[in-house]
Amino acid sequence: MGDRQGDAGDCIFCDIATRRAPSYIVYEDASTVAFLDLFPFTRGHLLVIPKRHGARLADIPFEDRMAMVRALDEVCRRVERLTSDYNVALNVGARAGQVVFHVHFHVIPRYGEANPFLVRGRVRLSDDDARELVRELARS
Ligand code: 5GP
Ligand code: ZN
Image (cartoon, rainbow, N blue to C red; front, top):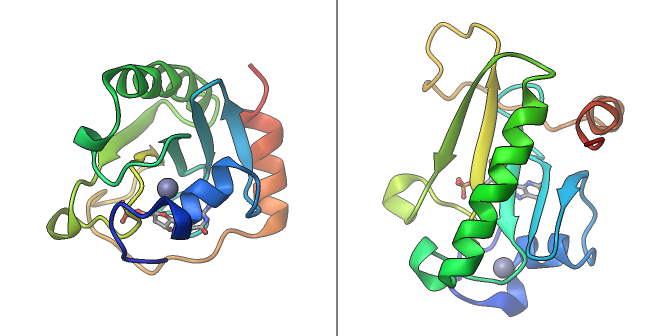
């Protein structure tokens, strides 16, 4: 996870969007990609990103921001296959908890955690779980 802001040449999410880096993609359209978070807060934790690099929301064009909302709409509909409850989060800036400086919405399914905003130990996504989730979430 690089911390260089605004640098598309060294950005893991750019690499994921262009398939230079592996990920479990569940949704894609002309300007966005959604894929499973590698260290999920909960089962089915997804990230929705614009294909175009930008560190902050204000760094990408209005059309890309709108495309992200359309993609979110679709992905949230699919997440309801897992559970009816979920959070959508956007961290902008290090002080807001942004670690990867390529704009992304988190979609975090909720299954009854006592305090959804408390970050507990995160376990790396297993390939078996990922494949099962892709089966559930990649179909439209
Ligand atoms: P942030 O804290 O920047 O809002 O969230 C970054 C998210 O990206 C984290 O939840 C982290 O687990 C996830 N992440 C970081 N590197 C990778 C990666 O290489 N692949 C995937 N799929 N997720 C990643
Ligand atoms: Zn990027």
